[in-house]
Image 1 (tube, rainbow, N blue to C red):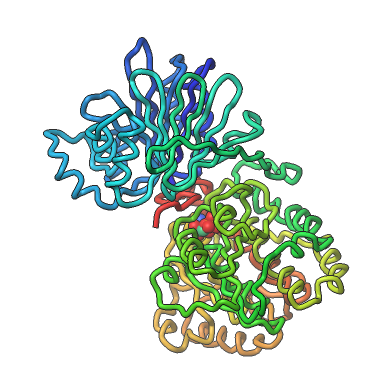
Image 2 (image 1 turned 60 degrees about the horizontal axis):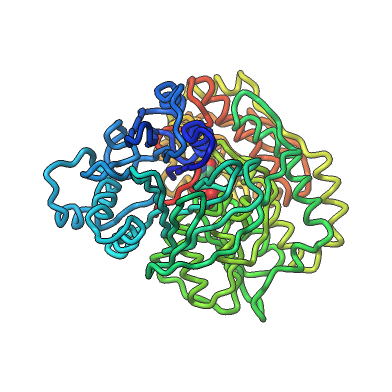
Length: 574
Ligand code: AGP
């Protein structure tokens, strides 16, 4: 949520920052801005909307130093005034910020300024910094002691240098060609740097005279070791008109790629487990929570007790912790604030934690140290597709590994993956479903989990009000909503519940609701046929047409599936 990019060096900083912001746009895209120094003057340009709008305004500008920001609004509406960077009242420093200063209202009152230009917490923070004592790095360190909440900040000083600070939100800094760059995501550094430094919580940096100086929270200079850049796999990339379409189409390849990486068992053998593994608890948000639900099903099938939790609920809930449990944090980005907050809390309490992430070097990986990577490649579209499939798949492989069945299943898995089909939905079906006011997804067992994920996909990119329900629950309330204006998409891939689901369909039809059955079984209903694979693979097969359905309905409505309104790819605030 919110992307930061700063550059100082011999080359055009404005150009570097804009290129960086374009890569970071997935983190927020409601407005963007840049501050730079030209003729010894600190200048700021902002634009509402995508980076392209900002780009038009800064064309032809040259500067050796700049900070830029792409915003996902937290405090204050989407306006130019609320866009970053924010200047202090002296106009001497400009700040870009990712995070939330929770006590900004109290701080604002204490600052007693005559005029505020925005409604943001960031404008309060930059003014707090300005009013502290000492040089800029000292000011930032003491301001951060008064600020409650999260921040990754880059501040440009009018006299031509940068300072950085970090608590909870990510920030990286690296020596790049001709200069130094600070970024919210190391992906921006691909092709520019081989190594980078990760700012840890309550660490700060000053970038002056072509050097980076690091400081701890007491203002003491510290030395830090650099880390090697790890790259996303690019072999599997497909280029379609939208990232979402490319990413769905890449699913088969990335599943195969992931399997190849896991095949020899080396990755699993490095996993640290509790001495006596008694249960597995999975913690995640959104789509990753749905893959965790599916993961828990796999573990239970192998006789291992497992539960899945929504991170934001777990964090403030009353769950009883267990030293004999393995806590798995599932996250595509590895930087989701709610998930990270849980990981930090459980780590501190001495629990065995494992990160299952798609992003090399992510913050979650650093917290847990114990990591199972997915090899989905970079996922850019806000709606997660191929990463979901890889999460489900790795959790399946891990369940086999823990139950000692991984080796015997390898051949079958490879065969399934080689025959894996990406089922699309045709236009007639898309048109039909589009005519309904109410859209429901139902299923039982693992199909209910697929229904949850299908409904989330549809909601997030079409803005259509839909929800998912376990089909056995319909008669306990939701059936009251079913009428001529309703269509129910029923998923059915499990033999044991097939007949029960078919009865639920009859109940819907009897109330004049329409039904589309998504199934690999023979049936007499209007249906979308999917191929039959061993039951554990059916969630992977069945989700693809549901992702395509959401995509086509989004295209039909003329929306951009890659950048749904109000959302961002990385949710770095709680
Ligand atoms: C997925 O389509 C969503 N955009 C969202 O629910 C996402 O899965 C969630 O925010 C968790 O993200 P993470 O996997 O990066 O932690």
